[in-house]
Amino acid sequence: MDARSGAVMGSTMVDETESKKSLLDQYFKITERGSSISREVRGGIVTFVAVAYIIVLNPLILGSYSADDASAKRDVLGNILPVPQVAAATALVAGVMTILFGLIANYPFAIAAGLGINTLLAVTIAPQVTWPEAMGLVVIDGVIILILVATGFRTAVFNAVPPELKAAIAVGVGVFISFVGLVDAGFVRRLPDEANTTVPVGLGIDGSIASWPTAVFVFGLVLTSVLVARKVRGGILISVAVTTVLSIIVESIFHAGPSKGTNPYGWNLGYPAVPEQIAGLPDLSLVGDISFGAWTRLPALAAALLVFTLVLANFFDAMGTMTGLGKEAGLADKDGNLPGIGKALAVEGVGAVAGGVGSASSNTVFVESASGIAEGARTGLANVVTGLLFLAAMFFTPLYQVIPVEAAAPALIVVGAMMIGQIKQIDLSDFSIALPAFLTIVVMPFTYSIANGIGAGFVSYVLLRVFTGKIRTIHPLMWVVSAAFVLYFAAAPISEIFGI
Image 1 (cartoon, rainbow, N blue to C red):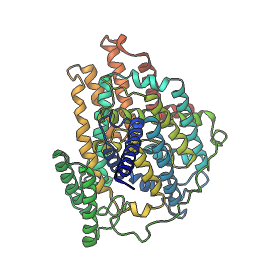
Image 2: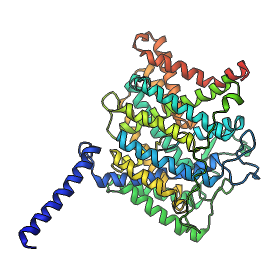
Image 3: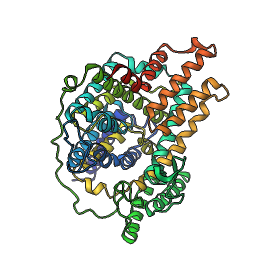
């Protein structure tokens, strides 16, 4: 081969590479959104690290290790969901839905089993029906959400929210994920009832950072903060990796052990030690194990109320999370609206259906995606990376459990600090705006629910607008949604009155 043909071949290879890059760039709009392939990959990895705990936590909320366990989550017939099967289903559904969301919606928002909804299933719904019937209710919840998307109602509600409340939602989400990080790391803990104090939470153990895992978290928080402040490329990912290595060293020396809900000095989720088994085939036997028999087991009104609760929680958790993440990523317009939000909401609705079919609980957008956004993710390519890691996690669950939540939690605190900057968009001099914004922000972390914060903000906004003579400024859909939230908050009294 002569020099000329070699040059031509080399040029052809470069052209092909550039063409492939161009196609990838065009599809995901990487350059248009000011990102790069390396940033998207890095952001996708960071998001997975921040969200991976759900593979461990969701099975612990929904499942049980043994039916003989006194604390096992039993359905109305006494049946349980085995932890290994729930873990495999959790990773499968999260992987598929996260990739689908990235390819269709083109946003770097990971999807996985939603916290809060899984607890609602385990504590409130499953004891009244069987597990397959509970998952059937989740599927119906997803179908209703898809109908609301298809009719344009869900998108209309999203766009009807005043810009100030959208900013408050973003701030509230930031405060919420920071609180989640502090609690998961053991820096903030709920005080036991026998402590004889009116203070509900406190610092560490007896007002001190008394455990090695929490001390490792503090190190990680300082390291993450410094790297982000110095604008080090890949700073969050570097911090997670370094803190994980430190965790392994600390555990090998001091033997803190896992927490498992009984050891306050142990690692909360994930255990920084070499696992006995690295990989194995996932058990997906729970996938497709659903039933719609709840409508015959329960009075129709009781079943409908359970579905209504699921729909409202799903509807506004996702809306609030997407608002916060979209604004943080710089993808929202001046009114806080996201382009192509209809497609995003539709895929998120499919997540509820998929979560029910997979027996993994309703899947929704995860607020921890903000950590990947902080690392530079701006497109759905990051989601593809995160989703592939979820799918791989089905086979390597023991390996991923090596990363303790104390190593990932610092990213949530730092991202929360970034998101709180949205508060400058709120006119706090107008109390009819300031109070709803304030309630939106504080109710989220105080009740551990994004939907509750949105509801408190919406209802107070409508009331203050009515009684301050600004009734004409209220969008008609805000009336509808606020009325729905009043029913949502009053679900228990309504059930008691009607005997359901």
